[in-house]
Image (cartoon, rainbow, N blue to C red; front, side, top):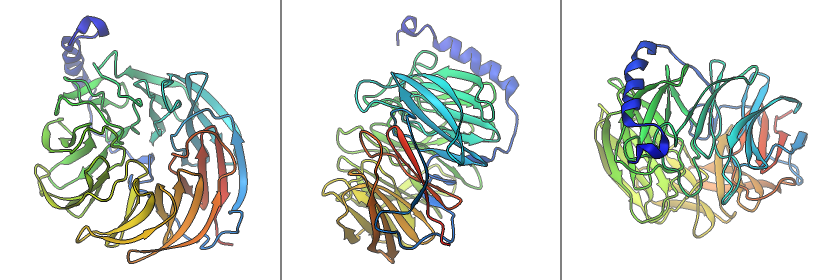
Length: 413
């Protein structure tokens, strides 16, 4: 690597790594809000929600425009809503109160302007600190109350990272006193930083592979914690404390878009992606250091939008043909399909919530793999693509379309 081009050599990384030992201490960090819900699995632990919507959709509590271009989801905690957006090439972290009133707006740096312009990263909130990444690779820690910047690290300039063709997109992962990022450089595939100072805790070359677009998953086992994430050519498992590469699963095809966070449950990993890989079920060993494939179904091609597992069935979108479908988690076989375009899948209070790439929002009743569309409406505001994953909090459904965000009341009266 040409260290002169970045101004940051590997020797300097090692010096920071050594110095960071002084800052390392044990802290049980409680993640208050993050990408795709409390467990990053698309499931929101809500109750007493509407089972049928009016034809025009649920009532709108408030709406706002001008938050900037972007595809990131809002996060909600306490009386605040946080979301990122891009305006005139500059990224912003924006805080609203729960009535939609703007509280503050802070710059995060340049955002991606080559294609699908706008912010990507959903913030992560932990014990009063916000962590957010720009599509240009700036990882920042903010004070959640005031929006003041605590520290920032540039994954390209400081950590030898190499950006990808649609920009960095991960929602930062926090574990105890560490925050993880994936610069995707040949010597810095993955990096752990002290979450209070931004100083390096460990560096992993892993597979020396470029990063993908996934928000990583943390698995807690009796003997260790494992980080699971996609690179462009592999699914990898890293020791969360040391950064040691525990295993990898090579991916098929030349496609580089792997944007769906994996799912872990009772010793089993599930993932769904495109380019001939499809849906896959893996057994993870008790020590987290080996994986064994149980089944794969190459016909399920979900590039992004996530999936959920309810009981023994996985519910997901398919890219081609455009539809939603369910998979038997025991066999990997398709159980049912629903012609409702393609897009996002989340779950709350016994119902699936679908948000399609044509802007339709659907309420679906799942029943042991069967899917029944109950209600739907078209999102009325916003610009560009309908990619953002919705959020449900305290009976409110938050929908984002580009520079617009709407809060729908889905509480059952």
